[in-house]
Image 1: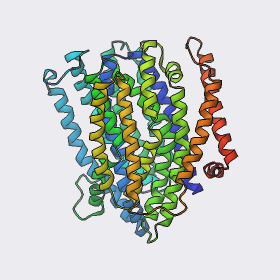
Image 2 (image 1 turned 60 degrees about the vertical axis):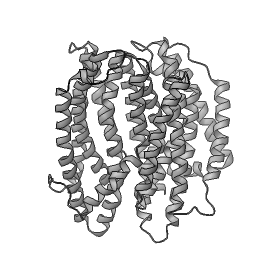
Image 3 (image 1 turned 135 degrees about the vertical axis):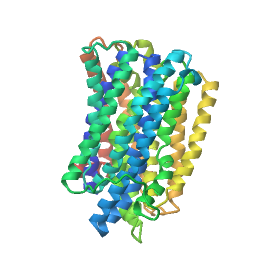
Image 4 (image 1 turned 90 degrees about the vertical axis):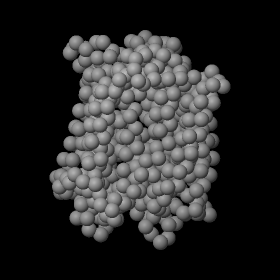
Length: 519
């Protein structure tokens, strides 16, 4: 268990660097474009390859490959290498023509044939198609990275795959910093300029993973062909298909949110939703996602045993750890949302009037953070026991319910983009509760299950933390003195962390003891 928590720690460390660079990148983007139709269009175009990255790179392909790759290595390492080679070849065979087709269609499709947003009109659709022609190519290398990352995690290499987003953010920031010296100042031209840099970053990321696997002689020759029926590689793709839906509720909901914001809400709405999602993903990647990635190989291994009581104990412990880290992160970010938005993004084209809608959207979105983490953990547990259909079926219904709830809230409230965030959080709550209930059919909870007590301790500590933060908080009203603004925000964060951990120390929480053992 300590080794798994150490792996989660290495993932979190790399992810922390990536998320910090991501916030720097988002700050530059917000200040360069503001909440404009150009920014909205670029972010919507980026969602398409980014959705595939989330579905495959952080979900379906890795989740389907890890159990098969683990079982193959237990029998014969050569079989594991052959399996990986077949998966890489199949992914390339499938995605290469798809990327070429999407690029060609985006370049040739008349913009007038597509619905246009109120602001930007046909010019926005032309930009959307031009960006999609370039950015969609990013899907090929990043999906290959997904297969390699799953194999590397099984081999005990967690840090390097987790470091890939650092490269992406570095390329993105470089594109923004070099645009001015290269004479690129028109917003539309800047958006196109960034798209080429991001696609190039995808192939650099792929090279970074290929090199260590090649040095360890874990890479077989690449064969461009589809997997044959009855082979382990074919089984991986069969298992992956329902996982695409099962592990992707948040990502699909995010895409729906952004599409609805683009067409149904005012200009700048996509920017508000995107920045709120970025603030949500910062604590999510450092906490719940890292724990889920680290736990999955062990869950997959213990699921093969006749007695699955060890798997249930592992699942319950990681659920407790997920609650322990996500609940205070959710509450703290909600309390300080307006200060965080003001400090991180205000400046340039992103003005003070953009703070309130972004902060409200963030508050309602991060309310679902604990349930998002638990849902992904329970989905991985289903995959470990070979049940990919149940999470997929459930998530499919919830995505439809989320879209319906979006429309209802948009038409019955004045929340704007915050209505989309509220619908996403409610869907995450339902997803986590239903997955946890359904998993009892596979592995009943132990009589001494600790999840309820984990919730009680986390709620008590979080409530105490919230009261103390509200008492000591100094609202950030201006960012003209950045050092002072950061100090005011930092004091609230530091006091909150110390208070939360102090309460758990008094309660002698097992989650805190596990954290101290990991150190």
